[in-house]
Length: 240
Image (cartoon, rainbow, N blue to C red; front, side):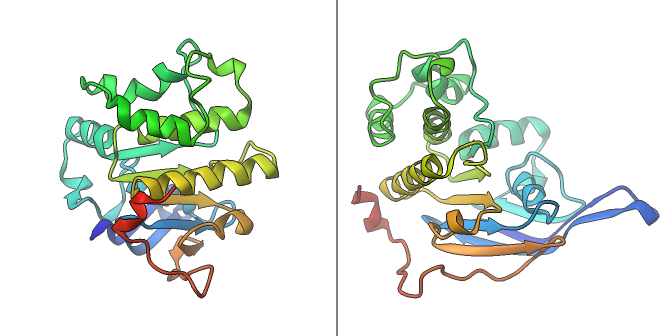
């Protein structure tokens, strides 16, 4: 089942001689449970792509479908609600609320939607991410790696159809980066979560099921980083 599909996705900034073609006719399909990495240098268009598929920006042309719903057909209010319920974001800068403790940060998207957090589900997440002893701490009492783990937990809290990670280890050292990305992959497998990660780091991209490359706004076809990789299946939701 396809969770994400883009057709002829194009984004142009400016006009005339100064126009910048950030994306050019990008066609992309990501299946449920897949962990895909989009690799590209600075200015290649990878963050623009993430913003388009996350509904954070509007394409110049083309269409984006998330879980069968076309983002461009929604009003601003509908898109805000859909994004909150169906798309989780993990950013480089964590974006935690400093006056809220770890638990309050994690459940914030669910509370904003007027729903009751699924405590059993969230308890599994915080245990996997090693946050069960940090729930009462404020963000400034945590290391960078711990803050990013909180951001991952928050992104998963609403059980989104799609999780988008934009350079999630950009502010972390290499060892912490590997730890955080390993945990991101584990949570993806545990909860059969679809993940798209933007990165410029080839080594980090190797953790994904499929690597896509973007250059000058053009996306190339993806390949498995490991020739013996088997596709993710629903049975993987039982693995830790």
